[in-house]
Amino acid sequence: MAKAKTNYTCSECGGVSNKWTGQCGACQQWNTMVETVMETGGGNNRYSNPQHLSLAQTAPVLSLQDIDALDVPRFPTGIEEFDRVLGGGLVAGGVVLIGGDPGIGKSTLLLQALAHMSHAKSVLYVSGEESGAQIALRAKRLAIDARDLKLQAEIQLEKVLGTLADLKPQVAVIDSIQTMYSDALSSAPGSVAQVRECAAQLTRMAKQSGITIILVGHVTKEGALAGPRVLEHIVDTVLYFEGDNHSSYRLVRAIKNRFGAVNELGVFAMTDKGLKGVSNPSALFLSQHDNQVPGSCVMVTQEGTRPLLVEIQALVDASHLPNARRLSVGLEQNRLAMLLAVLHRHAGIAAFDQDVFINAVGGVKITEPAADLAVLLAINSSMRSKALPRGFVVFGEVGLAGEIRPAPRGQERLREAAKLGFSIAMIPKANAPKQPIEGITIVAVERIDDAFNKLRELQ
Image (cartoon, rainbow, N blue to C red; front, side, top):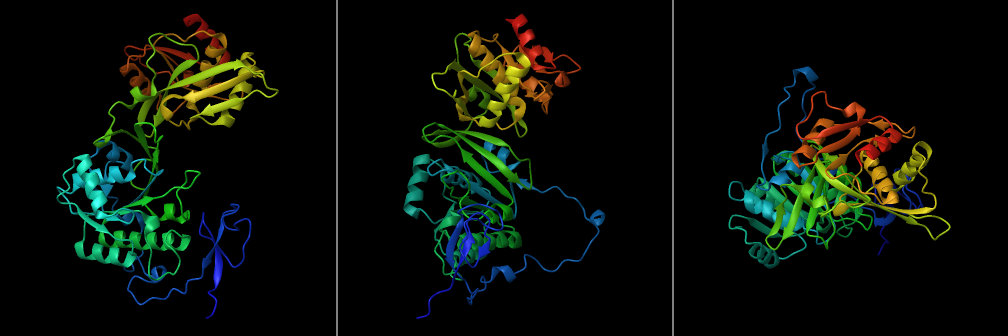
């Protein structure tokens, strides 16, 4: 029997090489080349050779100004926080990819959403990881009405496509894409080729038939979606589940959305009846102190269209090591080193012999630079062992020259802080409102030394 021919495929981008290399020539990632069996593209079924099938009939060439720009109609999932992350709801013919750690609640959330939608729309749940009895037991435990929800336990792609063509559901969930396999390929389920081709065929089915398809994806040890990077490119929306399995709160973040804003955040609480949306997520990220404590500073961060109040905590202590430690949880560690240098150079506060620990309360991850001012004020508060004033909130980016740079959507941040009872806001001068905001006093600053001087006056 002739030996099967093999090649090497990059697990990140799907690039192919006829020999093993330590670095992928397409995406420049190291140690991502995996040996796979070469596929001939054979197969007699009508779904094989997906690369040669067109998504639609040949369309005429038109001028862009002659095309009507129509808003994409949406339909709700029945879960308000999930709709927020999706940009207002699901879109007919759209493909959503949702990933997260095992056991974080992906299947639970989708089962709840399908149960809500099943009363008004035809839905299908395709499970490749659990049997029908297991899903029925989960639905019973969650106490949801799933009488109109159709279920299929299947992992063969051609059978799933046949079911979609026969039932024509309006919404279908594939749980998960890594368990699906196509007869046209001989590689194992979960391989780069299988994931790529199964996702491409399901996407083609969604675009041709108008079925909304939600794909569940596994993640790697690093937290990225498993499979080739092309998986994220071909879908319309990419959502990530975040949060600690030991915590009762879950965050769903939109990384990509062709039909809405990215970086939207949905906050859920895991209960015995499933995931419940949290109407006031700022309360989760603020510690409840009876008295103000040193090293704690509240900031207003922007997650998509939603302003959130998050508490930044700092602990500064004398170092007993030759190299002082710098640890940051929820914020970028390299940025912390930069801010400490700015603190020394432009405010005269040295921390080279101090261990500095920074934490964003509640497990939230802050990626925007508007947290800079809060980090520096928290560090200074911890070093002086003096608490910040009660009802004090800040935001602003700190530049290398010591200037306080403005943050986007400053008015919305201030209104959210005032609504939650904060009375003093230290903000960049460029964000100072022209009209006063009721209930909150604005302290506008231009430089980091100016911020510390005005803070001493308030204390």
